[in-house]
Structure formats: C-alpha cells, structure tokens
Image (cartoon, one colour):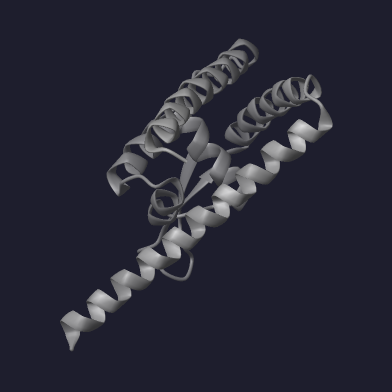
Length: 163
C-alpha cells in the first residue's frame, strides 16, 4: 500500500468521522436540555460505565492531562452532574462520581446516541456492519500492541537508568 494512498485514506476517514460525530452530538443536543460539551459527555460516559474514578484514572482512560480532567470535572460539579467524594479509607484519595441528576442526563444522552447509531447501521447491509466492527476490533488490537510495546520500552529505559 502506497504512502499517498494511506495519507489520502486517513484524511478522508478523519473528515468522515468528524461529520458522523458532529451529527450525533447535534442530535443529542436536540433531545437533551442540559448544556454539556462533547468532552464533558465523554468524561461522564466513562464514569457511568466504570463507576466512580479518580482524576488520574480518568486522565489515563481519556488520554488527556490531569489539568484537563480537573477543569472539566470542576465545571461538571458546578453544573450538578458530578460530585467529588473523599475515600473513606484514605482521605487523600478523591473520587469523581455522577450525581443522580448526572446519571439521568448521561443515560438520556446515551439513549439518543445508541438509537441514532442503530438507525444508521440499520441502513447498511449486515455484512458491511460486520466488516466495520471487525476492522475496528483489529485496529484496537494494533493500538493495544503498540501501547504494550511502548510501555515495555519505557520499562527497559527506566531499568537502564537505574542500573
């Protein structure tokens, strides 16, 4: 596969994914009365799926800085969607959890998201949907292998510096 083909394909895919996600988020905003940005939704969605999380865990999972999570969490707390909870066993640990209101808002947003994506997929042949899912699974495998290789390389560097 030529590099120019890969470059063109990646540009096209980037444009397509941006269009799809902009459209999805527009539909969500039409059905949900709470003002919430895409990055705030991503953070809340993660907390909903995994349960309470620390700022560090969220930053790791979202691939963003601690300060970005802190700023986003502050806004979500002020909006009444998220709350900070001190750990009972270690008061230094602060958990971020959805409030009851936040849980309802995120559930509503996810329902619109799933319903919309399902309607899009329903317009495609089943074989195309299976191919898309299979390709995405393969890309995740490649990304995980890359992450593991990077972590191994970092471990070797640290051991080399210590030795």
